[in-house]
Image 1 (tube, one colour):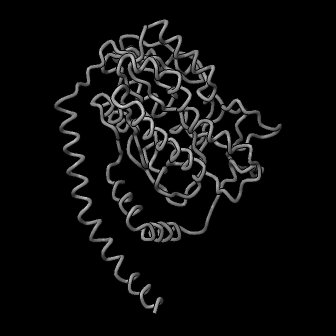
Image 2: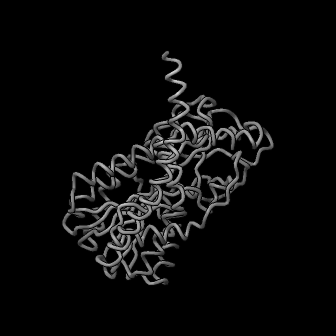
Image 3: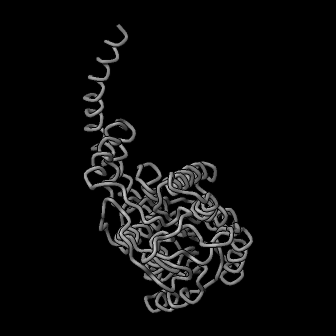
Length: 359
């Protein structure tokens, strides 16, 4: 009898779920449109003379965000480890229209460094209006291939604590100006994708942290969580960065190749949404349809991904980031130094840095 009931429920639930999806999607679109209209009419994107700290500003999303704020004549504080690269970006930002731009070499996973660049900002400008956490680090290894687990805390340090520490230090000053924290999250925080298990876990923790913090600070500090899917940068094409960004090398990395959208467009949407006071910025917006499946029909989403991946052949890997030697003749190389304060063992460093998801 119970088997019969279960079979009946398994037959009935999927159609009912699809009906819920069909009715939920237009309603969600309508709510989003109303929120966008309200923020557009009753908030201002005036940033002339305001102070913006941008971490991870030496490349990728962080760099493009700096240029978008420069167009709004903001005062910029550009933070990353690569000072020379930051200086070039600050010059371009001033040429675009930034009132001023200072650079501070710092590591966002070190609380003392975060306290230093926030204090230097206050000493120089006297205020902080926006804190943009753009520093991030991706990986492309399968979890069961890892032999050196020392890379695990490094990935979590950068993708989680590298956001939390700057926010913790800057929060009192943001409360004084009714400022805003902008977070560079990713669709992987809820959408399962192969080779990104630790990255996805860190981003999920990050989104939950800021959603909770939003309730704690109430209206004193705004929080904008920017979630991107595939963006048109080096990560989607398998491009890796070596230490200090001195050399770039190509390697085919993904079963499903994707060109994505331009990183400049995502940066423009982030800054526009933050200046309007949007709680969330999503690019591209159609990823929300996958979220509905994740909530109402997770099995359908899982089956779809399995079919998509199996249609592109057998599993391939570069062995980058797994603690195993790279094959001779490979164009890939190991990084020479970690961005985390945690010390790694001697020998090759075992993870890859990707430009669109790091400083």
